[in-house]
Image (tube, rainbow, N blue to C red):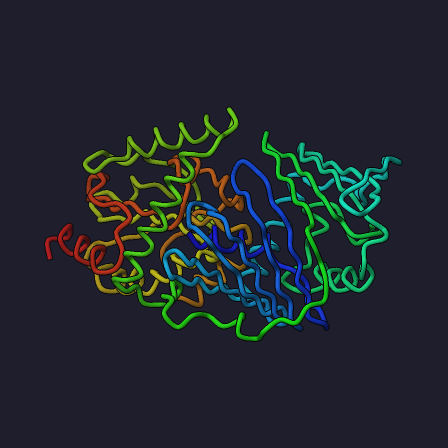
Amino acid sequence: MKQIFISLALVFAVGPARADFVIKQKVESPMMSGDVTMQIKGDKVRTDMPFGLMGMGNMSTIADLNTGDTVMLMHKHKAAAKISGAQLKEQMVAAKKQAEKAAVGGPPKPQDTGKTEKMGDYDSEIYTWASTNGMKMTLWVAKDFPNYKQIQGQLKKLSELSPFGMGKSMGPDENTLPGMVVKKEMESLGQKITTTLISAKEEPVDLAVFEVPKDYTDMTQPETTPEMKQKEGEIAADAKRWLQQQPVTPEMKQRQMEAQKIQAALAIGVKFPDFNETDVVGKPLSIANYKGKVVLIDFWATWCGPCRAELPNVIATYKKYHNQGFEIIGISLDQDQAKLTGFTKDMNMTWPQYFDGQSWQNKLAVKYGIESIPATFLLDGNGKIIGRDLRGDELTQAVAKALGK
């Protein structure tokens, strides 16, 4: 779930402005459609998305662009997810590495086609851009847009601020364009997204819009409350229904079907399929090595908020029952091994970790059809699944029961 929040915060982030600005855009795609409004005041920005994104209803983000700290507001559920600037930076650095590894980048500058087209009140020059992985983009640029230089100057800071300084590796560098982008069409994986600028102008913005409503539940607080669990379930159910309704490419459908088939086979009472790998320190790692032990297979990542929120309980359960036969095998979806090992050392997580730096393409995550984290499987001494996705007291009680305590 946190992965979703972080991704959205990155998509709708914008650089700081000195004057107050209000920018309105129209977004059209098979997955989301509606008007997006950005209200900018100094180093604060609020983005309102009045359409059902991921089935979660109207949403907003509030960001402090000095620190990068961002809050995602889900109005339908009266829920707030807080994401630190450090987490955003880590996620963007990881995404940048993945993009560079996959050779996603295209030409550093959009290419002038020499064509023009009237877009609303503006004569626009047409530029194109393409990446090596098939992503294509067409941009309409208006040189005579009012306040263009002032607005563009503020937006340019988007590529200069941490954690927002990686846009050039993930798409065209729009700062090189000679005017305001008034329309953008992007095509990737058979999906088309069109963004049209409605207006961008100086306009007073009230500081009150950057306040988080007091009656919203903080979904990223360390201790999981019954209210949080209820809202997490509601949000996950909405997202699942939404995904089922979305058009998918044949490739996406095939991948989803394969993952669902794998997950359906990993039922309670079934022996968990073994693997033979090495952990981050080079030691052999397989379930067979833990015969007779109660084992938790934990798919997680250091950047995953819900994973980190559950960690205190996992660590406490491990400390309590490790000497009595409880083991944990971590399968990390991180991309930076140094960050992973540093984090586990700081948290005193002494159990083995599998890591291959491939994030969601992690070898074992793909093998077991993992599409969201945290994802856990509790195994008995014979390697059979006796629990899935247990959290809080449910995990502690299940481990105690399996050990006969």
